[in-house]
Each structure stands twice: as structure tokens, then as C-alpha cells.
Amino acid sequence: MSAHSGLTRARHPNPKTYEREAFQVSRLLFEVCDHPEHGKTFALFDGGAPARDMRRPLFSGFVGRGMSAQIRALADQCDRLDWGGKIECGRIPFLVGHVLFEFHRCSERGHVFDLIAGEATPAKRARPLFSAGVQRGMGTQLRRLAHRFDELEAGLPPEGGQCG
Image (cartoon, rainbow, N blue to C red):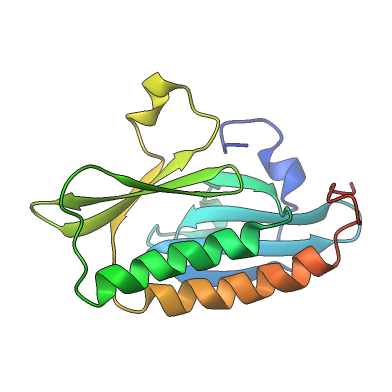
């Protein structure tokens, strides 16, 4: 669910009341929380934005089964681009939970990824929540995040639903 929802802050608890783990991936900051009352959640922030206390999440959601594998696929794409791979034309989409990462080539910035809310209507798809260049080491950063998601997924109920 996007940050424009009124549930965003309730779903991803206030950092002053419960600890969140931060994972920096390029300019994107993932915060992960395993809260006993609210469940396993994540939020995405613009990691380059000033005043960390005043930032609103770009997107937040519950951790679901299979997300760690989706993050690893995203990491593999970053590695391909890091090792000299090229996007000739169009966009390459990767869905992670309800977040869509789209890779494309920009003449000024090289390879770029856009972050789009997965439930966005086609009209809203034209406006990414966040956009940044693909940087060296992103694959490694994403694999660290995927490892944490593995741990969180292991604690999910057997039916794959989210408690809380």
C-alpha cells in the first residue's frame, strides 16, 4: 500500500516506540520491522532526503512469502547492469510484493530504476514514487536485504498470511 494511504504510519510503527532495521540500497532506504503486535512490515524511503525524522515513507507494506526471492531477482538484474549489461530499449519490470521496480536506460544518467506502487492504475504508472540511477554494489546491498526477508518469511504463519 502506498504512503498516500492513512494506514501507512499505523502499519509501519513509529521508530520511537519500536526498533526498525535500516538497509541502504543506492539512494533508497528500506526499513524493516518485526513488531509483535503489528507484524512484519517494511517501508521504503528516499535515503538521500534530509531530516530523517521528518520523512514520510514512499511505500510501506507487510512482508509476504516469496519476497526474498523477488529481491534476489532484482539483485541479479542490478549485477547484470553493473557488469556491463545493457538495456537496449523499453523497460524491464520487477515486482517485489506490491512494489514495481522498472529498469530503463536514460541518456543523461545511464541505467535508471523507477519505484512504482504495484496497485497503481495505468495513469499513475507514468509518475514513479522514486527514481535513481543504478549504482555499483546494489546487487550486494539487495542480497543483504533478501537475507533479512528470508528470516522474516520463516516466521510467517504456515498459510502465508500476516498476523496483526
